[in-house]
Length: 153
Image (tube, rainbow, N blue to C red; front, side):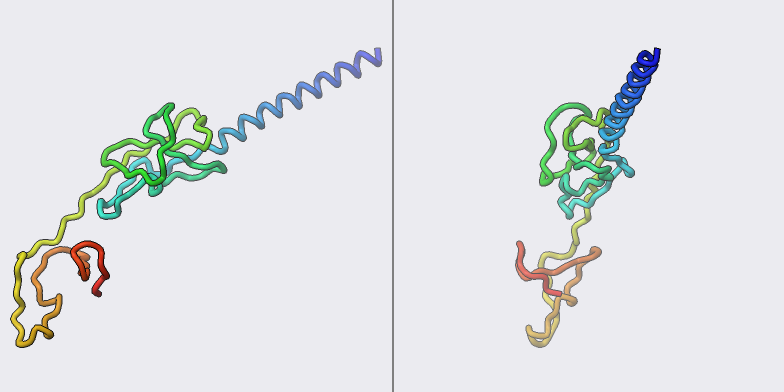
């Protein structure tokens, strides 16, 4: 009789450990899935936003972004974002189950306007400054070249 009680006790302990190990594996895999706090993320077009600009909370694993709610290949961090497209966050393995959805909005920034030819009225060409030009817009920046170049001020 003593042998039988001892055997039942060991079986119960094994079952409890097996249950705890199974539960711990479930908790660990779901704990690494990213969470999205802001499902509507907005960018400006002049920022040239990429997948790397998307925001999700890393819950212990690596955040990967997908174009599809299920399946597919992870997008490259350098891939450009597209206005009104959906992007889905998952972990490195792609096996979180339901992927967290983000809708991207890319706002266009109005370009500055002004006459294409303006001659400032100064006595000497050296007296002319960029402030002499009539341009409408906000946060206007002047560069030394039409493409690239250095910021003038």
